[in-house]
Length: 149
Image 1: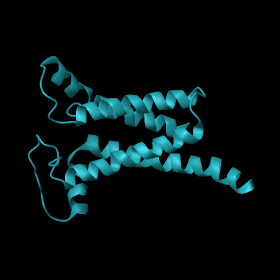
Image 2: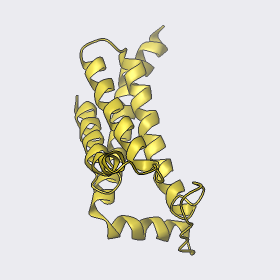
Image 3: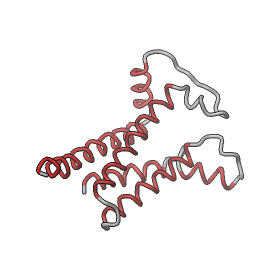
């Protein structure tokens, strides 16, 4: 239950992010701009997907095992994506984004980015918390029953 709540908060933070969530996606759509930055679309769709997943699991329409595994996978994707985005020059792998490398130690780079943006810090902390809660819940629910069979 706690994991589901943190997942919902993570989803809302991704959808509501003013620069790279639904508000920016709506700007792209309203002004018919090309989607040069994939994050508004990805954050909006993934956030909605997280909410739908929690609701499906809550109502018994998605197995708990599948929900835990999907939630853990999504948190890992968010965390790895965040690190990858910054280590590749803020999305420099994307054809329309100019690379912006800071150089230096990658750990220090990620730390500095997190300290410079409270939204990112809170979001990443909640993603880690969600991942941990899901992993604990999964282990408690499924590892003991599998050991007994």
